[in-house]
Image (cartoon, rainbow, N blue to C red; front, side):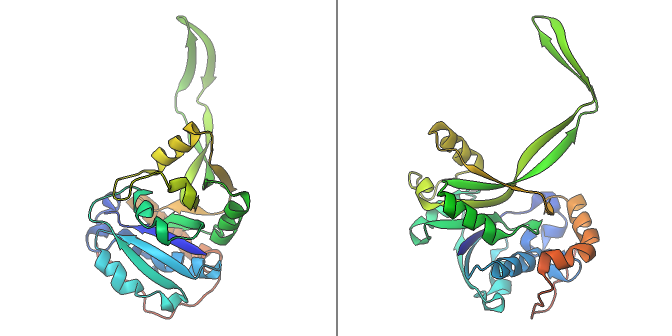
Length: 248
């Protein structure tokens, strides 16, 4: 099983933490980096190889991860000279990838079983399988529905339920065959193209722990929750290298 970890972003929303470190290397629980946790989880799920798509401060990621042997994995790298979106870096690697593979953001903190997602994706032979999570959005206003100038429905401060993408995907190589390597391609574009061609993606619904570490508030929450979540995230797997320390 092969994983592509998207680790090339600048992490602008997480500044000042990402001024000196790429977002996947910021420490969680003052003990491990996000990428430590992700690599450990992938190895625990049965992945034996990974490609890191790097850009901003990519040399730090390359120096820290090396060949992946500290996790029992074989790691190689794909460098972005220009931002290519979520799927663009994958298209450039297509000929070297297996028929089905995992793609994930390098800043996701979750206890999702990546191997189970990829197994489900492969068994269904879907073009794309999206790990999804339920979010609730509280609307702080009375919501009106109008028809021809008259109010026909009213709901006071409703709570709306949505399923959102977790930034983890099972991808089939054939789903990306028609795209040009080197051009930007976003996850949104791929989904819309699949819907247009009547080949809809599958949803892998997940209800465990998930946090997209995009903002300082999210990062503070991750550090506060890590002592309680450590076992479910890392399965008490020891790491053999020193922890990272961040400087703001």
